[in-house]
Length: 169
Image (cartoon, rainbow, N blue to C red; front, side, top):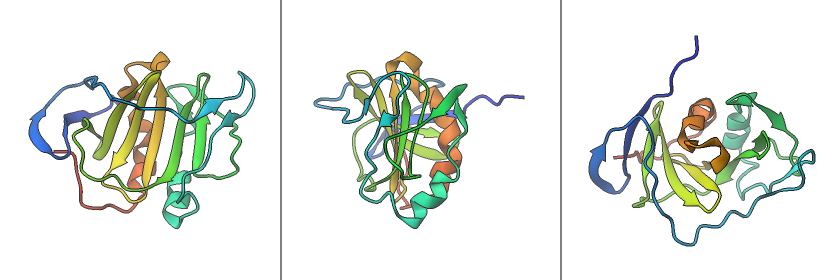
């Protein structure tokens, strides 16, 4: 039986009044740019590994990457780093090895016990783990809206990372 994702809280990790909802609220982001591209429908997804992709923590997280994301098959990437993965066309992209996020006023979702800071991009959403070091980034094209509903499959990978004590509030 397929479990429904548990989106328990939407709030600001820097404080404020929590708003409970089943679906994430959309928030504008100024100047957000996606630096990753797809090189053709059947080609490998062009993805650069983050600075700390070769860490032991990311090696553990990469072992927990899902086989599929909402029925989307895994795709090859131009990176040989296991800390980088992609699924579907247009590609959902996950990268482990980003610097831990500092408190922010951007919306923060708690999904299955994992905090995700949401940034609106011109063509979808970026979700970055909040409270892990290193962090995982998941880029979800607007094609898969509501984008936050794809996050539950990344729970095991995110929970493989060391925590910082920060949480969505």
